[in-house]
Length: 587
Image 1 (cartoon, helix red, strand yellow):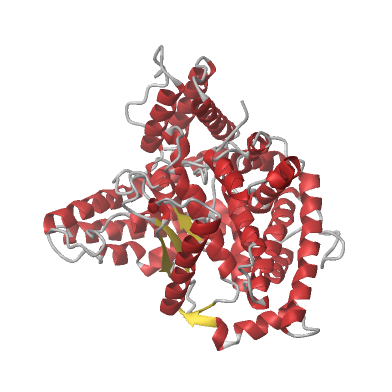
Image 2 (spheres, rainbow, N blue to C red):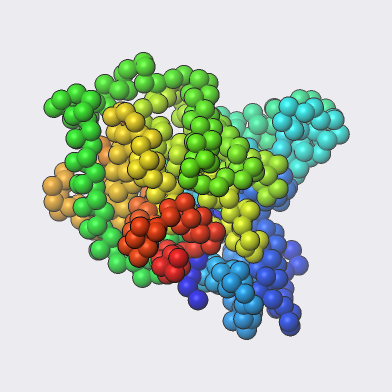
C-alpha cells in the first residue's frame, strides 16, 4: 500500500496525552472502517488543538494537546498499534482500500518522525505546527457565545466561555510540557536551530507584552466568569512571557547554529507533507529553477503589455501605488467575497457540480497572522460553520486587488473549498473525509489557479500578472526551501550564484518572484525554516496534477471530458503524491 498523509498534520511533536489509551486496543474481527474510525477518535483525544484548528472537529473542546515527552510516547504507541492491526486486516472494498492505505501511511510517517526525535526539537512560528502559535490561535476558532446573528441565552454564552476558561487554565501545563520536550532534546543532542528559536521567543514575548490572552478574555461581556477568565488569561500571558524569555536566554545559546535540517531529515518531511517517499532532491531543485525562469520570462512579457519596455518591478510599483488597484480592508473583504461568490456561481454551471453545502464560502479578515498569505479553514463536519478564507492584513490599511484574484481562486473555488470542503461529502471513511494530504491539497489549489487562467478569468494584464507572480513565487519556494535546508547552492544567473542559500539571499529572491513586498518575503523565509518541505507541496503537487491530466487527455483524445475527470479525481479523496499518480493513471 502506498503512503498517504494528513493535511497539515501537526507534525512529529504535537502529540497529546490520551487518557486511558491502551496500545493493545485491537479487537478480533474489526473492519478497516472501524479501525479508521477508532483511530480518528483516538487522535482527536491525542491532539485536540490541531484537530480543532485544522480538521474542524471539537473546536470548542477545553482540552489541549500534550507536547510533553509523555505525549509523544503515547502517540508513538497509537501509531504502532494501528499499524499492527492494519497489517492483519484486509480491506473489504475500494473505500476501505483507500482508507487503509491513507491511515497506514499517516501512522508510518508520524512514527518515523517520533523515532527520529523530531518532537524534541520542534520549533516553529507557524500557526499550524508551532505549539505556542497553534495553541494561541486555536482560541480564535472557539465559540464565544455567538450563533451568527441569532441571540443566545446567557447560560449558553457562559457554557461557551466556560470551555474557553478551562482551556486558558491549561495553557501553563501545556507550555511546560513543550519546554520539557525541548529540554530532553538538548540532553539527547537534538537541538533546534538558533535562528528559529529566537523567532519563536520573539513571537511569544510579543504576545505576552501585548496581553493577547487578557484582551481575548476581555471579549467576555460580563458575568460570573469575568474574574476567573481575567485571572487565567493573566497567567497565560505570564506563561508565554516566561517561555519567550527561557527560549531566548537559556535555550538559544545551546541551540544549533545551523538553520537548515539537512537532506536526511528533510526527506522525513517530504514524506509527511507530500507523500513522496523517495523524492530526488536534485531533480526537484533543477526542475523548479527552470520553471522559475520560464515564469519570470512570462512576467516580463505581461508587464510589457501594461507598459512597453517596463520591468515587473516597475509595474509592481506602479500598480501598488495606483489607488484604483487597491481597497481599504472592509471594502476589500466585500470585493473578495463577491469574487468568491461569482466563481461559485459561474463554475457551478460549467466546470463542477457544486452541492448546496459548498455554495457558501466566507471571506474573513484578520489582523493577526504568522504567515503573509491567506489560508483556508475547512467547514465543520456538519457544515453548520461554512468554509472560510482567512486573509491576514498584517497591519495594512489597504490591500492590492490586482494580485489577489489568483489567491482567491486558490483558497476558495475551484481550489481548497471544492477539494477540502468537498471531501466532507465523499463516500470515504470518516478519517479520509476530514483529513487530507498537503501535496494533494496545495497541488490541486495551484492547479486551480492555472485552470482559471486557461478559462480566461485573468482577463486583464494586471490580473494575469498577479497570477504569474504567484506561480513564480511557488516555483521559487521549491528551490529556496530545499536549498536553505540541504545546503544546495544558488543556481547560476542569480545573485550569489555558487554560494549556499541564506535568509539574506532568499528574501530578495522571494520578493522578486512574488511581488508581495520585502516584509512578506521575510515572513515566508521564516516559514520555510519552521515548516520544512511544506512549501514544496504547491509546485510539485501541481506538476503531478498537470502531468496526469495531460496523460488522461492523450489517452482519451477527443473523448476527454475535463468536468468528469475533475469529479472522478477529487472523488478519490486526499492521497499522497506517489499514490495520486498511480490512481489518476487509472481514470
